[in-house]
Image (cartoon, rainbow, N blue to C red; front, side, top):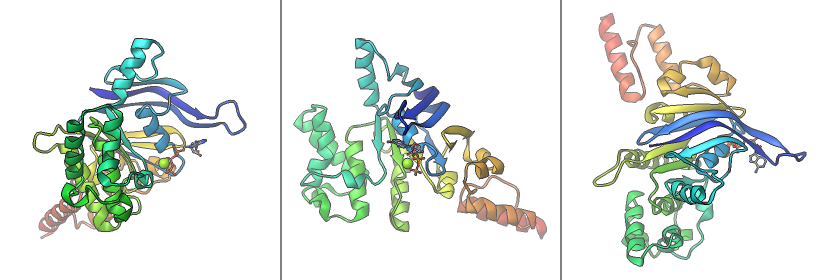
Length: 293
Ligand SMILES: Nc1ncnc2c1ncn2[C@@H]1O[C@H](COP(=O)(O)OP(=O)(O)OP(=O)(O)O)[C@@H](O)[C@H]1O
Ligand SMILES: [Mg+2]
């Protein structure tokens, strides 16, 4: 089960003086259950790409397939299938808290499932479960006005609204933008918990747009690099972050942790081994020092 983009291009406002080709010849596959990151300089096409994946924008050329179903089908049966396939995907836009509008947290989270025509019982269960998943207590927050919450809490409510639609794929556009370090860390923890699946919950596929290379290094199974609308690299973060020339071309810096490790390794103070997070780094230094001793 997967999302597949086959030779996808997208042009904004074609045929007008404002015409702008935002994506060119993108081929990629999103496999279920993994965590993907999309990196790229501002204007490289990240937000456009995720809107195509979610079926919110139709490709100008090429094809987007979700679990084998073509999203831009023309015939009646194909269109019906595409609506169902699109429902498999949830998308959280940048600063999603700006889209909260109901009087209570409960009503805001219930909005999507209500629109899908689910029963009251099912809606209520989904609201409770989604709030729990984002770490907000239903009893405490359900009847509050979303506008009375902190920035981080508002964002969690907005994410709960998407989770309440039960997506198999969750796409998030820079979900940690503007949060303080603790808020960032706990949101990222929540996202990795969703990916792993908890209790009787299925693991979720996560697609994360991020400017934070260190987060990508430690969290992503696979990453994509966009440069001016083209996919210039894809693979595991450890592979991609070795390609410094491609990163530089794309206007990206390698993760700080890897820059530090390189210096330590050159100075013979750390062993050559894959380092994705601080814990790995400590191990590499311990091994390096042992070798020297
Ligand atoms: N609605 C639009 N109409 C016309 N051009 C657009 C529109 N949205 C985006 N673009 C253009 O398409 C290109 C890609 O934009 P996109 O928003 O996908 O970039 P991004 O990688 O998400 O950037 P950022 O990191 O700043 O969010 C940019 O050149 C942008 O100016
Ligand atoms: Mg964007």
